[in-house]
Every structure is written in C-alpha cells, then in structure tokens.
Length: 624
Image (cartoon, rainbow, N blue to C red; front, side, top):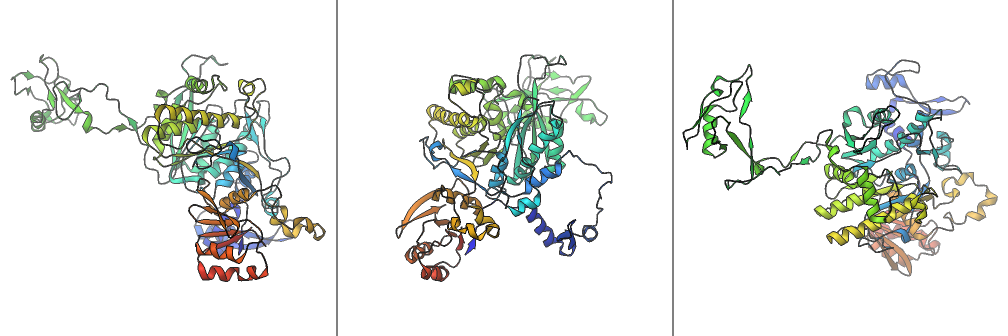
C-alpha cells in the first residue's frame, strides 16, 4: 500500500517536473557554492527550445518588484504539513441545528495562507467566484507577518513544517520603512494560490482603496495576466462629505475584477421597466415610446427625409430640419402596419416608436460605475445592528454589494470563497440570494482568530475574536432569513480550524529520528488526535471535498468512515481483522485507507493485497 503524504503539495517541485516533461534535454546538473551536485536548468538549451530571449541579472526589463518578492514567491509554492480539524461544537447543521455537520458550507479559523494551501488540491479549479476585502494598508491596519526565515531547502527538508512562531498579525504603520513591502509580501502568495482555485470560467473580485490600488493592480496583472483584467468597478461607500488632509472627501472605493480564460460575460444589470405601460392594451404588453429620428450625417440616405402621414387621420408630420426619420418609407410603412408607431395629436410634435419590454434583453451590460447604485457602508453597519443590537465594526461591507457581485458572477450551484471574511457578510449574502432564487450556492470562508479590542463593543458583548463574531452572524442571519422566507436552503456551516499535522515528525523525516528515541514513536499519530481528525486530513490529501457526506459504519467490530457514498472508506482502528478487510473490499470503494501496521496479525497483513485483488482490484489502497 502507498503511504499518504499528509502535507500540501510542493508547487515548485511540481513545476520542475512539468518542465522536465516538456524539455528533458534542458535538465542538467551542476555544483552549488559548497561543491555539492545539484539539479539545474540549462538556459541555453531552454532558449533554443522556446525560441525566445532569456534575460540575465542586470539587464533592463519591464517588471514590478519589491524587497523579498522572491521569498514571497517561494512561500506561495512551499508545502506545509498542517491540517484542518473539525470544530463540531461550533458547526451548524443545514437546518440551523447547533452541532450539526451536514452543511455544505465551510468556515475555517486560521491563517488564510495555510488554509489556501490546504484547500488547493481539493478545490483546484472548482471555485466560480472569489471575493476578498483585504487590509487596505491605511497605516492603521493589521496585516499578516509571514515567516520568511526558512529557505527553500529547509522547507523541503522539513516537508514544509513551520517554526515555533508561525504567522501572526502586526500593525503596519506608515512609519514602517517596509510599509508597502510588507503589504505586498502579504497579499502576493495568497493571490498566487487563489488563482489556482478559480474555475476556468471563474472570477475574482477584490475590494481596495487608493492606498494600494496601484500596487494591487500590478500584482494582479502579473499573477492573472493583463489579458485577464475585466474591470475596475467604482463603489460609492458614503454620501456625507468627510474631508481628509487634502480637503477632499474621498467617497469611493474600488472593486478590481479579474477573470479566468473561459469566462464569457457578467450576467448583466436587470432593466428598470417602471416607465413602461400599456395604455392601448397592445397584446405585446407594456411599452415605452422611443425616438424615431436620427441626426443628419454625411452618409445619410436621401429617402430618410420625407413627410410622414398617419394613415388613420391623414395628418402629416414634417421631418425636423436637423434630423431625419430612422427608417426609409418602406420600413416605416411596415412598422405602421404592425402598430409600432404612435402618432401625437399635435403635428408639431414627433411620432414615436413603441419599444416593448417583452422584446428587449432583460439585462444590460454593467458599467464601471454600476456599484454606485448598491448600498453604502451605513447599510452594512445597520445590518450588523439588526442582528446584534450593536454595531461592532465601522466599515462593514453592505450585503447588497456582495449580493450584486455574486449575482453577476455565479450560477445557482457555484462555490464562493472569501478568505478575508471578517464579519461574514459574504455568507449572509449567499444565503439571502439562495433564499430569493432557489439557488444552492456554497461558500468557503476563512478568517484569522484576530482578537477584538478589549474596549470594543464586540469584546464587551462576549466576542473575543473576529471568528466568534462571524460565526454568530451566520447563525443569526440564517435564523432571520429562515423566519422571513421559509426557504429550504442550507443555513449552516462546518467549522474547521487550521492546526498542526496529525502526524508526528517521524512520519515526515524518519531518517532524522535517532534510534534511541524511536520508542516514543511506536505510533506515528499524535496522541491527542481523533479518528475524525485523521479522516479530514486524509480527505485533504486525496482531494475529496470537505462538504462531502460522511457516515460512520461498524464492520466486524471496527469503526469505518464512508465518505461521499462510499467513494472513500477509511478505518483507523488497530487490530483490523481479515473479516473487516474483506467486507471493506467487497464494497469496492475508490479509496481504502488504513493506519500503518494496523492489521491484527502478520497473516492479515500478508493477505491484505490478495484480498483486494480478489474483491476490488481497482481500489486505491493507502496507509498513514
């Protein structure tokens, strides 16, 4: 049986393997500064293969760079040996039942860089829309301070394990000499991984203001490609004037939008038919009068300048001196026969063409300013007050903003990701929209357990960190939507937290463990970890959705997990008998996973492969 790797993929290594597969003749060996033989790329051969110029260090080129950018790229690609652990007591069932774990929505507590790495294999190319509202770097924001201490080699040697400090939030003030650098190092690796989560027709929306708009645009151009830029939407966030140091009131923010290669178009803005009516009971339904003339141009057709006669009354309508009719006489007569022309009583006024609502496209293409028509910050503040009786955060995004973006970019069964989820506006917006249109959109939210200020209303109300606020908001919003609509939608979420691997160090680097200390590693699984913990890490390792149905069965006295209707069968008990192995094999799962050395005796272990070859040879067998 193959052993599960139990850590996230090493993207740099995978990229190297792709290069080897494409250009094997460009792969060579050389010596490093210590005289060790290391693998290398022959740039001269690569230049010949791809027929393009390779830029050496020191040559001028167009680029966007900053201190530590290379380390930031390494961090995006480097593996980590962490996992997600289910927090059942914080989870909410699909129907709103506390402690339920049947919801398809996911809420993750922890560093979003770790969370994205843990999700990248399972949700690769499956996410239709990402929305994030990252720190704006205003000088008062807290940003992630990531650990650049380990080199690429150290990551490889330790299977991506981080040091004791891990990652943390620090305040990024303008007095910091690395003010923009630290923000760029924070956002770059997260967007790099997020890109791979997007479906081929997916979109990412990023809220930002003027402080880092220029830098964010350049980073996104690099990561997603300039050809993937969709638009910069302008959102009006307040109506009252608030002057800054320059005596100018900045009332807007931006939403940057980037698309993947197979994206076609936004859904469009629903047209407003308030001006439509049907005073003459036309069977084609409500209509509005439209202009029937065009301005005179050099390419105007002479037969567009003529007297128009109402056949019912005989009244004559002269063309305007500076304008002509939109149609030649033959086409105009056809419109009159079809009762599409409205003649006024006063011949000094112009006839108009009926424009029927039933014949128009139901939506128009969004303009770059269309978000100015959605709610402002004050709406977001009010929505929090409606749920909690208090306003915890001053700049909460309004639900109408997120709803509008979701409506433009998703189908009714799409997956939505927000990895700077804050107060969980995205979750409430997704639930509200599902209730309105019968959708089954699913969300994945990620939020660091950032502590609330002890002087804040949130802290005084018992919410010690932002995750507490977000999770409670989802609960209360779900109850509110259910009471108001009665819709049969998913009101819950499965709560996970980012944690260290379930496996001991010996699992990843057995050769580094001294022989004298092996007695402490008779089992390579940490003592405080449950079978459920192991199952979640196995699902991540095998790329099985965290929202999959999980059932527990008993087979020959052993606990067996059945995931996704038997797609994965996992048994983490010890002393597994031949009877258990046979019954699992008879169910013909795609994956079968056991603990290493878990067979009851040598006979069962010796017969294990033969049992599966007899009953289910296609099953992929794994151990941990």
